[in-house]
Image (tube, rainbow, N blue to C red; front, side, top):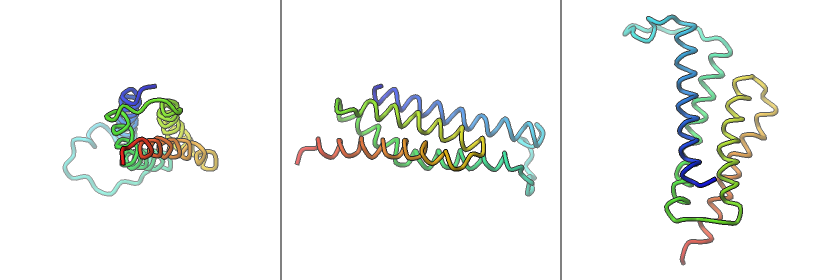
Amino acid sequence: MTFITALVLFALLTLAMLGFEIFFTYATQGFGYGFSANRGAVERSPLALRIQRAYQNHVESAAYGVPVLAAAAAFGLQGNGTEIAALLFVVGRAAFALLYYSGISFIRVPAFLMGTLSTLYIAYFLLMSAPL
């Protein structure tokens, strides 16, 4: 998978997660909730909290994932399994989101690590290929 493709898939995953959070909020709080200027504190279900936290974690992972993928694409990094690492980053983030939604905490850690370690792998090869 190219780094540009990984960035596009990551963006689509971000939009899907945001849309899921919005639609779930409308489904549980009513359609008028989105247009109300006087929103008060809302009691959220455990699932709603997991959906919110999964999206927040996903946005935070963009802070380190997107720059590494963009730099790899800009510098034309190839080989050494970095394309596979880009695929693993996207797959790991998608798996993490689904596992977070499901509430299975102990198995989402490997999915998180798959996304994070693949980013570190790409960053390592970016640093090693940089001219001194």
